[in-house]
Length: 455
Ligand SMILES: Nc1ncnc2c1ncn2[C@@H]1O[C@H](COP(=O)(O)OP(=O)(O)OP(=O)(O)O)[C@@H](O)[C@H]1O
Ligand SMILES: [Mg+2]
Image 1: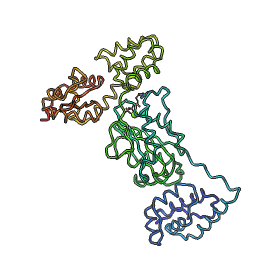
Image 2: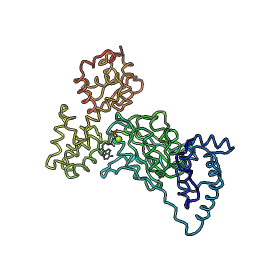
Image 3: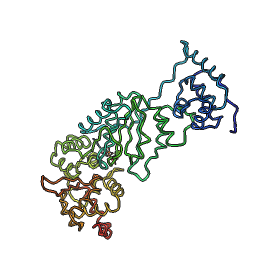
Image 4: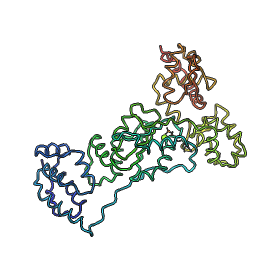
């Protein structure tokens, strides 16, 4: 042990915060890790759990005498002066003119809600029930609601809206993070934990542990038994979210992800679909103007259909109309009816349907990408497995196997056959089909690679 600084003395501490600060300095002086302190305390026949040390040093409250005894002894000093200082501070805190305790930090990290949020009543009710009817969850389990669905279907919008509606209930605050699961650079759990710990009021001088495991332990300790709502948006995988699950006894979690998280058992799952036609028209009216939608109901309905009810596409179409007050709705609908133009027209600013589809395509495994390009050769949005089989040049049952990853990615919907009919029918949204056609044209030679046929 090399002590670079003078040994801290407890005499100068006047308040619990100052006392804890000196305890932290003592650890810096001792140059021991939480783990080493635990082991050294054991040698003295004392108990000093790592997570307790982390929690006590992370808060400003006066620690219990037993802790001070074990901690100071583990640091290699005589506990008595420290216990004396602790008694003095505890007595002063009991007097009426004692300083007020520092109020706990209440994080409020939610991004702004959408002013024109539309529909999703059933999904909102389901999320609220999952996050508030917590007696349905076993006591040692953190209630978790998972929202899944395709790119641009409105997962983030829904999660943020639902969370805002619940802020009054979660009086100890809301934590929010975009985990960037669909990008090439998903957020590192370590970085997220450091941010969360700071938001939960970890005093700046507290030494931050190195390992994700220790950080996660400290995070669970600081969050446990507090009414906190944690929103983990755009999760890549269970591996990414596991360390970000808070402590039990108060906190709840809302996760969104493009795919279903299969190994985490949520209290509730919400699979988000495109907006129904009526709500699509309502959203368009809110963005582009109710008067215009009322004036051209057929064109409005057509626009919603041409956008596949996808909120992202509707946002883009609506925003384009909002910039062109003089355009009749049917003018944009006409542009979108031309299948070769549709994806080009569905872009404005940094919002683009094609870019979203590109991301989904890039995330597919190689073999699924080849199958995906085959979809571009289809003329109709509905097709039976047998049609896919002939395009893929494989037996019908193998076609289902090829199409499964696309169903999992939400790019296709499988409609099971009627009683006694074993063939599945598939439905592919038009925008997906058009993008698949672009890919097929761009990568024509690769589209007929033998792997496509399972050979
Ligand atoms: N219910 C809604 N009401 C109004 N606008 C919505 C609604 N749902 C989504 N939107 C709009 O649609 C666009 C896409 O929504 P959002 O970003 O929530 O999708 P997402 O499913 O999170 O996509 P990604 O998988 O890419 O993260 C946004 O511009 C959003 O404003
Ligand atoms: Mg999102």
